[in-house]
Length: 375
Image (cartoon, rainbow, N blue to C red; front, side, top):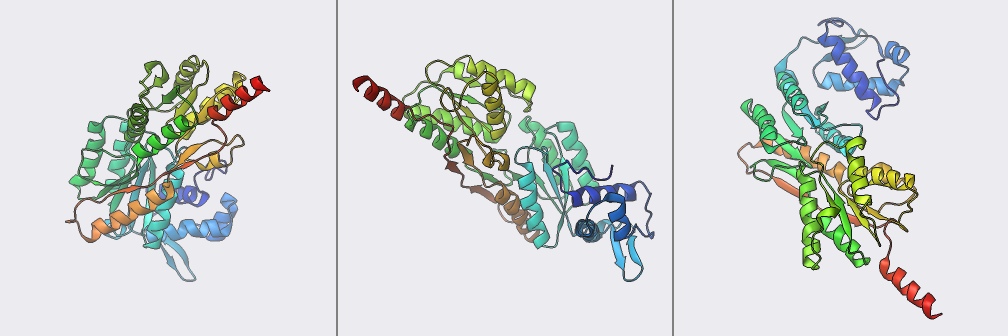
């Protein structure tokens, strides 16, 4: 299958990668003509505009060259030509979380500046990050946007150092390594989580659970913001309400964390999911247990993913400008290419609370109960 129509990966990008594979395998050799647009439309079932976009990108990447009235031909591999136009993007998984929106922001900004991107999915695994780092180096990319894997700082430094050894600038996106002098674009995760916890406190909640992954810098900062908000309001940390699996997000692993937290449900419990995918899982498990949100359980997330915005129950969450993170990451790379002597640019974008309908206002609830008793 050349194109998977059920995949969230853009169809033109799937076709583009398939053509690169055919060139790398020698199916289409240097100097040979590739199938025409009409033939590719027939083979793939894609519309002509999608096929044309894939071919145009490969022309920009110096894989192909169009010849008027003769077709489009495979070029001899010239690393210097490719180096002018490719920026590598290393994300955890284009199919889930923030990766697709971040990659889209990066791609749009790259295209505006006559660059193309090469997208790589690490699945938050070190060996995959190593593999794609080597591949991008061989492709002579001009720069790299890297979302650090959910692993140790040492392993992430290893990936970054590989690029630096080849004089390839790296910009960290979303997740960062706080002690490393490097360009990055992120959001203020500490204050975002502080604001969310403060919102729950304002709504009368005192038993606030949190589920997060301590291996991910952004989630560590969110946990710190949560702790600080509780401390500032003189509410002691309750270890039974904290779950830190310290592993990749999978339903199997994180379901155990959710179930552990739900066992603590007495009186009124609010659950702060450190990202929206955890919140969706928590919602699903709550429904299985016939718990209503927010009547039986208050639930909040973080990210404001597109699928969350369309979700019927209305999750209160923190909006992150993910598209803007991707866009500004490319902008930082281009600035670095113009002058490699400038100090590291460390951009922290604002995030904000999006209040919907997943939090019970305990103040209103208590007032209504007092009224019903006196009526």
